[in-house]
Length: 118
Image 1 (tube, helix red, strand yellow):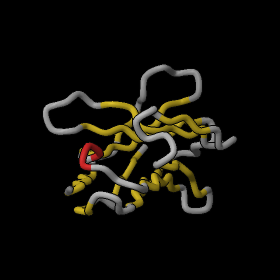
Image 2 (cartoon, rainbow, N blue to C red):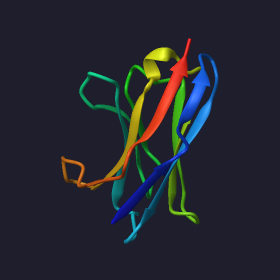
Image 3 (cartoon, rainbow, N blue to C red):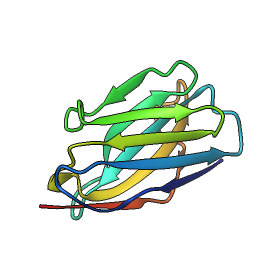
Image 4 (cartoon, one colour):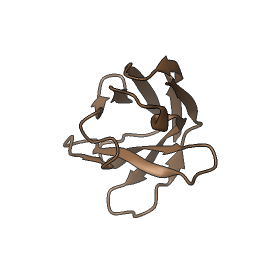
């Protein structure tokens, strides 16, 4: 399994950004795909997840209403649309995957840095 995250960058507060996670190596229909983030000096935290086959989503309270996770079956890609970005959203964002029924995320992509200036 390979997960390739991209789309990070430097934006201003209030701007939008879309992250992509290209997934390969197997069929992901029975997987939960997640986005996590790690801010400087802080522990990694959950941001959002999606059950690939049904599209069920889950969000951390800190991003709910501003971020949207989605997937494109044809492209085998998961997206994180981030709107109304805040300086506290600054972090390295990671995509991850786990099989349905497995508690821990099993596969991780490299991070992509998002910097939000005030």
